[in-house]
Length: 131
Image 1 (cartoon, helix red, strand yellow):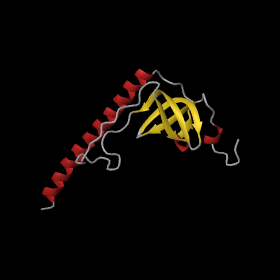
Image 2 (cartoon, helix red, strand yellow):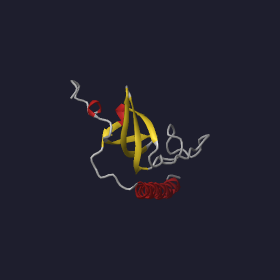
Image 3 (cartoon, helix red, strand yellow):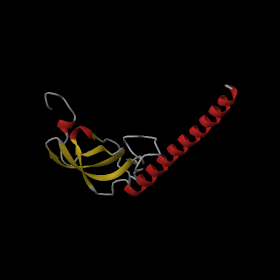
Image 4 (cartoon, one colour):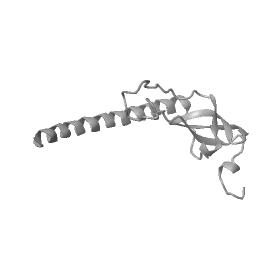
């Protein structure tokens, strides 16, 4: 254990870790440690990446509304070591985890859409009441 006690310094090649890449969360195998970076092989999708411009969230009128695909099974990606955490859960099947993550993201967007519709409805009523 390092003197700073940081978990990142205790990680070892071959361990299962959790990473965040462009708003997506993944479980993967730590393949390589290289200074402040780590190379991780993706094994499962824990949270699908969000769509749109990450610098202007919830703005549909940006110049480029980005489509973000999940990283592929066994795709290797480089991440900052500070974004690597030990993963202690069971690693789900990649395809199943991808479908579950997509379904969860769709459900969250649908809920946000319904919240927006209700908010607009109430604001329109308030607008009439304020006249």
